[in-house]
Image (tube, rainbow, N blue to C red; front, side, top):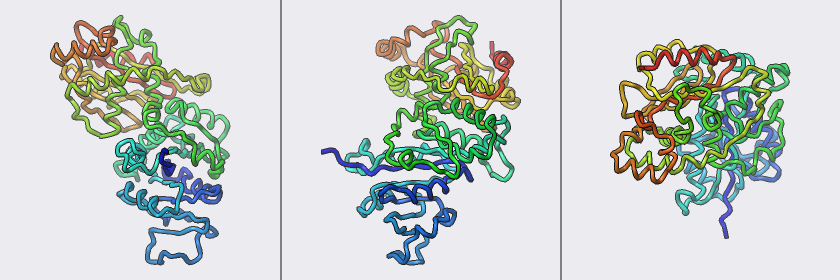
Length: 426
């Protein structure tokens, strides 16, 4: 008989979005679940006094634990989240775990930790499963700052790019809660929804005030799947669906390496390790890549067009001149909210680079070597295993390319393309 795993829901969202309010809603209407709630700071939760257990076995000196009347418990998020979850489940008192992440926390590392407990890595550690990742979005903030194409970076946030964090929280989730909808106009709400749908076309979306939502949409939803969630971001969909013939004047087959971005993204998200340059990595990515071409979703296309939210893929089989591209980044055109993809630099023909931008934050990291750099024997084996390599291969440049998706608001597509073409080395 299959072992029953304790489901886990992860709440994410930037500071002030309404995670704590939602948390209190769940605790007040948990429908019989015995929930262990893990929060970043109990002092900031302000759990309703009626929920706090009178007395209890935990001494007042332990301010990291608050027992609740309904059989639930609230405790502070520890560095070693895995052991914390194991200990809570080991008590046998709880049948659900709800984690409220810090507002400045990236969701992927937490998700990776939790999924280690579903038995996929170690059958002995088969005790919990990640059920749902919920991203709570402050609609008012998005409308005032992000939705209007302005940067969210504030002087009082040291070394943190708020826009990048919010985008990560939106891109990697299964459920999006648009909170505080009564504080914006229908026009503002529509614009925010259009932006979010471009960034994350697959997640279930709800509109709320004060985090009021049916608990069944938060707990035990069976929505989370790591692979699907990893591939659900809007930039991946754009790379898969784009008709690159419209963008490319080089008359080359455009479909090659949709999966290349997936491979590098997978490594980047899971290990933050950009030194994976051996050819086995390429072999693995070619095996996995084409399984994702079935994503053809067009959520809210009319809505995104109505509010000026658009996207396009820049694709060339020529390299950037490094200095020219760096100058372009310093003066990046307005309206670009998110961009990501693979780039080729003339100064280094061996290595591919993963380019990523969200708001003011820009990152370029080594993403491994091009397949074209592999020995002929290895290359022949890879082409035999993946015929698309043969179909898309360029006799002069092999698999080298620039392929970047741009998502933004009121972008001047033709001007951006021309300015990028001016950065090409030849």
